[in-house]
Length: 583
Image (cartoon, rainbow, N blue to C red; front, side, top):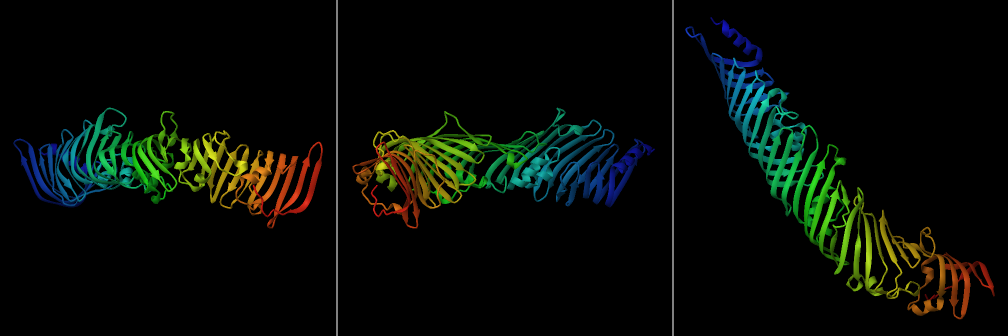
């Protein structure tokens, strides 16, 4: 008469593989009249395998009633694991779970009244219909340490890449409430590529500390929400702080958890100092914090970053809106800077409608910025400069008036010791009180181009004015001046003079110079062709002069002058004694 139950016990024996533990309080009751079997017993610290799961230290009261099995779990050291479902063992110290199994229908209903340990507490229910390949899971998380989420979530719901991101990026955080929902065909879970079901999770987080990578500073957040829907993942927060800046919105999302691509979108508004400090650490920029003490103003950043599996291939898109930015040092004061900077695929793009405008020492200035390469940018524009507004003694001494200047600064972001600064002006509206050869009279339109660049440990400056070219090594105080000629190699010391001069009046040079200058201190070599040279009442045509410095004196190597009426020529190392030369 008990033969029909043989299959039940055989099924239990085959599916439950018990490896250790004890059974007590066994009670068996068989109703012959109705052919009903009732049995109950207690399990203590049992270890068993069932389907894809392994249980250790299972303690429960078990009730058999005909086709139904009811288990009430009350373990205090339960370990649940599954190589297919979980990333590692889930250790629970408080277990209050009811499991009801209908052997005839192949269904399991799991009612989780409480499952908890030091990191997590959750409850809910799960329905498994093995005969119909169906799962319905609905659980709520009361509290959890966020770093424990990857061990709690089944692999089919939280992808490996998201699990890795949470482990690496979250220093601290708690889940104060949330839920996990799953419904659909068990065999096709997690429903990534079809419509046979849905996996969904919603978690409310607080007290967060996030650090995306070792190079980036951490972000502390009060609240955030994590959402998972099938293969999609998102992390969102609003109205938070980073330093003194407001995070109006921050969203990290993954379209496919099988992929390692994270997309971050954010709107952050706050002081420029915050922006510079954060990006200094994030991108390893060489910025001296002392340089930021005189920076003020605000910036609103609209960010859209894509972090790919390879860090070197990350994609950065953004726009930065400056509001009343300012900076000053002892030479320059930049104020009222407003405008936008756009970043597209890691490069600053130039938009004719988007530029920065402000004041430099009170002079209105327009500035544009663009990328020249992945680590080099160009800052260029124009400013109508009133020289009296510049707090530079050299300029105040020699230049007066007001002129339009164009500038182009090439900045190497990875090495600030290798930059190029170019400025130019036609000098209209200015008057320059330079020595006679270089005098620039008011409204004269000769173009002046100045380039200054730092390369490794050298400071170089180049000037080009009225066909006069010079290159000076400021570090060694050496260089050359070339008159209407191609550039030459820069000497190791002192200065060389090269080139062709149309007209040189030595009388005028003496007249305009107020101080005596000893040329022998500065001149290394002279090689000039002068079409017309005047000294006193004498005029020399088509003159050539070559001088070379030896020890502390200049020696005449060659002098010649040719005209229809005379032909002068001198050569040899004749010592040219110039004690006081007026120029």
